[in-house]
Amino acid sequence: MVLEKIKKLTTLQWFRAIILGKERPNLLTRISLIIAFLIWVYLFSWQLLTLVAILFSDNLAHADGIKAAYHSIGKNKYGFIDGAVRLKLFTLVQLGLYLMSLVGLVFVWRQKRWGFILYLLSYMLILISSLLIMGWTYIEKEIPLIDLILIGGSIIYFAIGLFIFGKAEDSGNQGNH
Image 1 (spheres, rainbow, N blue to C red):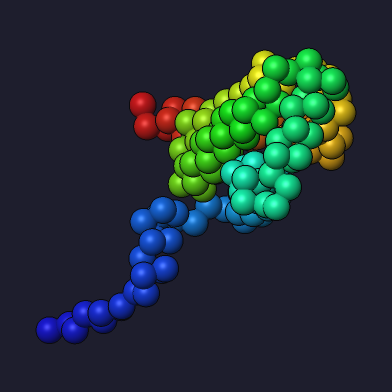
Image 2 (image 1 turned 180 degrees about the horizontal axis):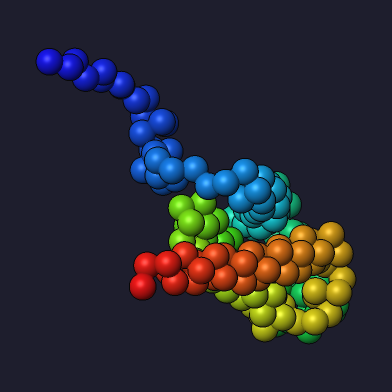
C-alpha cells in the first residue's frame, strides 16, 4: 500500500494554480510573458492612476479649479466639450482593454492559440480607441513615445509568436493524422 503525500496549498498558491494551470511553458515563452507582464503593469498603472486622479479630484480643496482646468485644457487644446468626462470614459475603456490583454497573457501561458489573438486584439483596440475617443492631437501630445513603442513592439512580437505557435501546432497535428 502506497501512502499518498498530501500537499496543502496556501490560498495564493491555489489561486495561482487555478489561473496559470499546472504546466509551465518553455523558457523562452516564460521570459517573453514576464517581460510582457511588466510592460502591462507599467501601461495599466498609468491608466489606473489617471482614473484615481479623476475620481478623487472632487475631494481636493480646489476641486472646482481642477474641473475648470480639465475643461479648459480639453476645450482649448483638443476641442473637447467636456474634457474630464471624455478622459474618464477613455480611461475606463483603456483599463477594460488592458484587463482583456492580461487575460490573453494568461491564455498564452496556458499555451492556447487564442490567447495570442486576444492579446493582439486588445492592444490594437487600445490604439484604435485612443484615436477614436481622444483624437490624433491627444495621442501626439499626451501619450509618450515609449508607450507607443512598447505597445507596437508587443503587437509585433506577439504577432510573430502567433505565427510560430500556429506553425508548431500545425506540425504537431500532422503527426496525429
